[in-house]
Image (tube, rainbow, N blue to C red):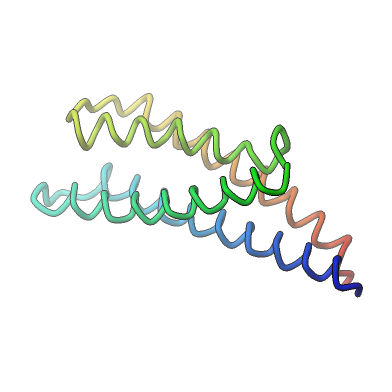
Length: 130
C-alpha cells in the first residue's frame, strides 16, 4: 500500500476510534443519569464521562475540519453529539429533567454513530481488503 493510502487508513482508523470512545462515554453518561440512584455521585460521575466524550468530540471535529470532510456522513455524529450534550447539560446543570427529549436525542446520537461508523468501515474495507 502506498504511503498516502496507509496514512489515510491510519487517519480514518483514528477517527473511528474517536467515534467509538465518544459513543461509549455518551452511553455511560446516559445510563448514569437515567439509572443511577445515588444522587451524591450521579452528577459528578456523569460529568466525568461527558468530559471524556467531549474530548473525543473535539478531536474528531478537528480532524473533520482539517481534512475537509464537512457535510459528509462523518459529521452527522458530531451534530447529534451537540444535541444530546445540550440535553445532558439541561439535566446536570439546570436540573431540568425532560426524559423524553433526552431519550430522543440519545437515540438520534446512537443512530448517527451507527451511520458514521458504517461509512468509515466501508471506506476502510475498500482501502484494506481482507
